[in-house]
Amino acid sequence: MRREHGSVVPVLLDGDVPAWLVLGYRELHQVTGDPVLFSRDSELWSQWPSIPDDWPMLPMIGRRQPSILYTVGERHRERAAMIGNALEAVDPFELRGHAERFADELIDTICTKGGADIIGDYATLLPVRVLATLYGFSDEQGPGLVTALNDMINGRENAIAGQQHLGSAMAELIALRKAEPAEDVVSRMLADPGGFTDEEITQDLMVMMAAGHQPTADWIGNSLRLMLTDDRFAASLFGGRHSVAEAMNEVLWEDTPTQNVAGRWASRDTQLGGRRVRAGDLLLLGLQGANNDPQVRTHGSEFTGGNSAHFSFGHGEHRCPFPAQEVAEVVARTGIEVVLDRLPDIDLAVPADTLERRPSPWLRGLTALPVNFTPTPSVGGSL
Image 1 (cartoon, helix red, strand yellow):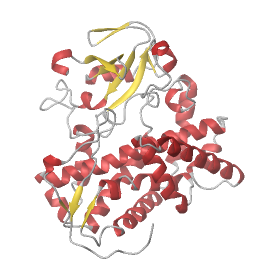
Image 2: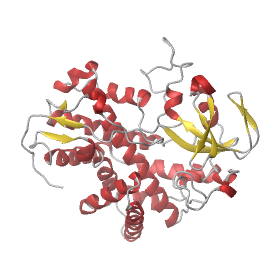
Image 3: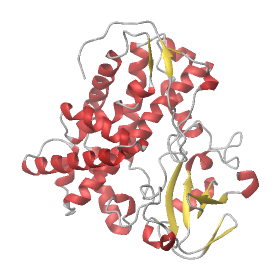
């Protein structure tokens, strides 16, 4: 696509809806770094008159949604600060403790069997349990939230029911914490002096949980796939941890969970990557395309897989808040380390070239990661 069309590519979404896919590193830096010219305000979109009510991409490209995703200007900065402050106050030792506890409980359910699907049996179950605890949910509510969120994200037949369950659970937790504040994320968001409504906080909590769950699960799965299939990481599978962070960083460059993001809207006519972009045009952020831009991935360049100059968490004022990145990294790294500690001889159960990815243009993750290992006793605890 880059060779044929360059760094900014005309694409068609479902229903032949036109958009631009930004693949160039420098072009993506320009788009995400200029929130005035390339706005997050979806009301600017020139295609709204032709978008049907049942358009399948409406959950990804919403209109008049009250979440932080579609606020702009000072209000966006205030909401981002509220979220960042609430997450920054999370104790890192408690966070790792929660991640280890849930990871051990999940491993307990498979360790005696000698084989498992690390995606379905582990990675897609771990992040949401940790996030739910940070929010202030009880352990008993955790499994229901896992099911609801996975149904909602994966578009299953009960996706709407999952969304409704998640929304009602958030509303109930907010009501509880307004009456009984505690040391948790929800209580800190409610105490913020910004004067946010319950609806705004509910929407932001749902966005945070969805954005923090599936990409983190895919980060775990993609990193373990790399470590199980690449000889460079073999030592880490036999008692060493030094390469876990290296594998995780390489995944963010080469196999990032969030491949593409929708989007930004041009506030006026402009030029981008040699293309004439019109006011109201939609731009999709090609995060993986930018990471692989050969113009910045040359030998000896500062833009290489050895650093964190990737776009996997976005860029600019609408990027993933830094405290949220830290939470995701702790959960993912802990999840991987617990697997290596508890299942030290873990090995891929199928040929590497038979592993399949989910058919999604947005998130890149495995449908399954079958593994074998020597059965080991559980350490106790239950889900």
